Image (cartoon, helix red, strand yellow):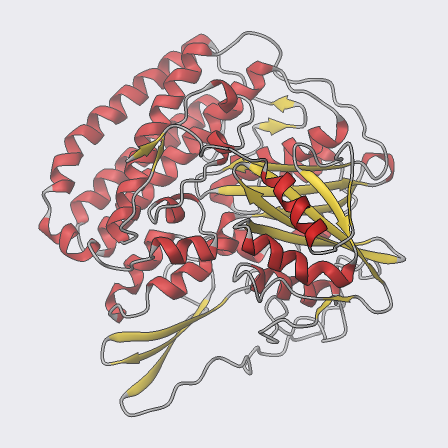
Length: 535
């Protein structure tokens, strides 16, 4: 099933939300013009924060993320909602001596970990949060130290030895034949660290609890004080396999804050780079899924195809993963005619090879046996979790920022969005296969329509306190970014939100009732980024 049209909009969702605020007797100030355009901004009192979450949930807004800022004399707290392609930012202020406000977690599962992250790093208390356990704080700093406050140095106060994080209160299950399987945080191979605590009976998984944050890099802290070029280098390394996606989101947020409009040629080249990143990651993960169920031929074929495109990236753009190809105001790499011709040829070649692989994959009983009905995420649960990207679209969630909240150059293109409703590993496999084919069409269209012109606009230093917000569709799904500038065009606050932060909890749900040996393929079918989560 493919969706080519956005959902019908009969009523402005922001207007409906404001009507609900009036009906609930909640004072709210719409900031006009919005400094976070195209997102709207509403300022409210902190005591009404919880009721806002309740109202938004009742109107089926998707809770997309939250961030805080230390403004010196007070804290600022923001939450991002999305509905029908419209973004709405809620903002409130908190006193520095007692930063506390009601939680959105009782109304949105998605808010759980992000609010705990904010509590651990800012010391902001969410008074009715249902889960008091720490999340990002792994004992590398004390309970009363808050690294994202301005008075905390970027280098921290490192102890000679960090205490072991050995008393995290995982859920305990008891009963005849119930046993526990701890997996990680250190895994075989080179994957990043994450802990998975299973409760099982026989081979059946009763419960899974994730523990992440082992590769917390201090991204938000070390962004402070950087110039736009320095921030872009950092953004491109939030998650190494999504360097174009995060760099694009950071660029867009900074450009909106600075009032810089990039040349159309630069927008098209960004689009081509983003779709190449999507193709390479989808091809690789299709192979990895084959490998997890013992279909080695598929693994080798998809791995070979990925390597060809990585080498082409190196030849045409100077980097296999396309790092540092975006700059504030445009791009650092051009696509001359001979490069465009080579990319057209490789696109045709990849499509031909996929055509040959399709009947082999479709007729393989081993894949069918292991993929079908495994790791089901129902449409209802995907909606409640706010699942994004191919994880959400394999479970009936249709949102794609390229089509539903379009930005240049996608606002000029026809973006096809494959959607499945079965929600199992097979659905996530085939959605990614279809997205791969759609990405190839977009690359061909953008190459055919590639306009002439400059590669970058002249950068303009934004005013102090200028802020910007951006949403782009990376290969894993929607990436959000917020930026505030300080004095002399330096970064005061940077908040990136990788789609993995939203999708990791889906793995806990979809693996329940499956057998333990199917966990690897369930995990790979979601493929959350540890680095993108841990910041």
